[in-house]
Image 1 (cartoon, rainbow, N blue to C red):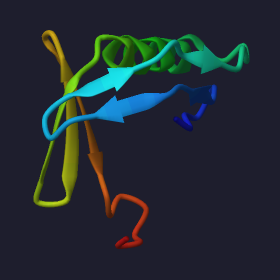
Image 2 (cartoon, one colour):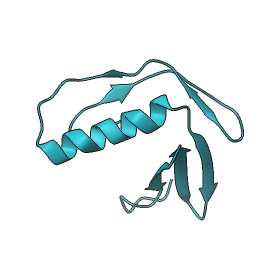
Image 3 (cartoon, rainbow, N blue to C red):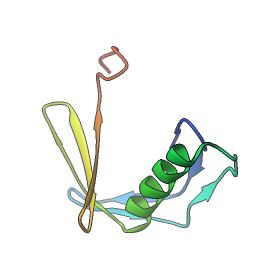
Length: 79
């Protein structure tokens, strides 16, 4: 995971609906509070072994009440 603040790495196993995420290793950059909160949110969702789905080019990871979305074309490049 590459965020504007820290990079995170983990092992991931997946099924058609769930991710099983191993222990998260992350860099320890001191960033502004908003970016640190974003990193904590992402790590929290991943460590919660989220469900995942893709619809209309948007990946959604959901863990408990929190959902994170990623648009495959957000950087202007279609994979």
